Image (tube, rainbow, N blue to C red; front, side):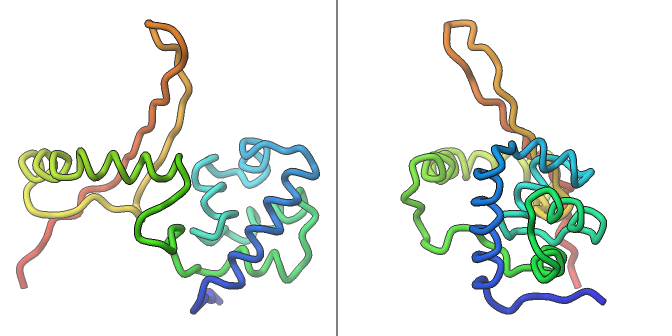
Length: 156
């Protein structure tokens, strides 16, 4: 039976435990994702407390990280989502995404509505990909793909 959480505490504690195990075992998020059989973005989000893992994935991740049976069960629960408890993030990496939305949020909204109509881009039926590519001017660039299903607003 699917279970859900009603507060973040248990999943936050499990996330901290899992990240500690990841570091102690010198694992990458990709290695953990490979064990789960799911994408690196989804698996990372799940281990960090933002998604439930299917049973087989939860068991594989828990085994790799050395987590116990209770942790395995908790990895399968529907979490209370939201990884930024404060409205404005203070972590520099997370703040830059906030800044990007502050600058380009209205542009994204205008372009989505012009191309699709009134509606939203799903964060549930969603894919995320992060790639590092060479910058032709030197250094590196981050290519972040947010791929969500469009859900039109429906009058009722």
